[in-house]
Length: 386
Length: 199
Image (tube, rainbow over all chains, first blue to last red; front, side, top):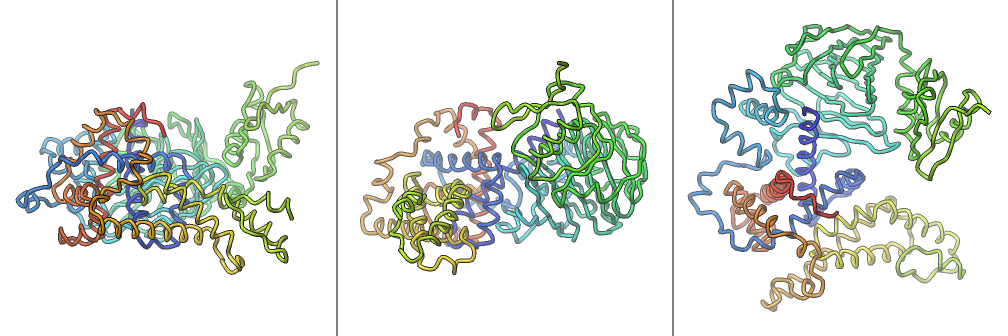
């Protein structure tokens, strides 16, 4: 349910972005930089769909000829400035005190109400900083005068794409291929949700604004450091390349209060009974889908971040995880024919753009055969006994 | 030479200049790649401006032709930006021309010439139930946002005219219009009534 709500959240952010692009593209003079941003944004299929839907709404508005214009009194009484989405504004306006109460008691009940109530809570605070992603930042272009209270921004990369984001505080996030994150900057916290894929975070130190990455059933809190987080289907791996981070198990998604002001590193998180581990430079830890932390291991910082140069380095890694990574960097998707093939242990390097060669090599090291099923898929299965 | 002509990707290939035939072929390839990679986003950008998809296609084609006819393509450092700029200028010219026509002849105020020939295919498909939802979504907009949206979209005032009439900054008008559009879309998705909608 939480996942569904999270999906809904990013879908709504996408609709807002699509509408902003639509209006932006109608303005007479649009800069080359904006066009470049538009092209980046429009590469993503979900964005295309949202944009086309908005274009249809524009057409359908033809049928609205009998809606009267608002009266002067109505206009006088209206204080909506367009900085939030309309739904957020209406929800805040209508929010009875009971709703606010719920925010303090069990705010994480639904992600949607969480965001709305969280927005209500920060509405009183002057928000100084907002994310300005290099490739996106529609809000920065169109609504540049004042940051919105709807502060979540979604960034995605496609197949074999990489991307660097510079945030307003100077921190950077490098996204690997097929990666999706949502970034929320609040006056007293910085929260990034890693929905899928892999990212390298370089965080600018700010003790008053902890930087928290939420990935599945765990969260990583950093104060001035660099670390890599990779999310597979059933596990999350954190490798620290600089400084220290705290990794905590959690039983639920962060509450509104935690997003607004996450606890300091090493403090247990409010919800559930999390176990936390302090991870230093050169160390690595993984947790599974249930949030159960593994043991701390040595990590070669170079292997953890080699993906940035188009190399994937492995040391004693299950083949299924290797393939999950490789699939993010290739248009051809590798699928396994059987479980025992998935569990082979691999050590070596995969070069982006040379995946065919790598597959060929696999047939030599392992009792595997590569079957090309169609132009988009490759089947990897255990070789049949003769 | 002849083969060269056929390999041109554009809808209307220009006359190849004999001296630079080889160079031009690779330039043609570059434009072809541009077309493959960016045509969808170009078409979307144009459709935001022009009322019919047919017009958008015409403008895009014209822009590609102009790109291929460039005397000195090497001077254009960023082909993609140039293509978009050209297309958008062409679209602006069309809109200006139409606006002039509208001023001259009040009968064509609603752009009857283009829409009668090719009504946007979606409009017929949009069910009455969906229109009702959109209508309700617009009615529920905050007053100033609703006013800006109606003046700009339904009364067909330009953003600048809307701004003047409402004594708002044009930037604020655009912001209201975008919020209103997103609100309509969300209203529709919340009812799950978009399932039958094709893309």
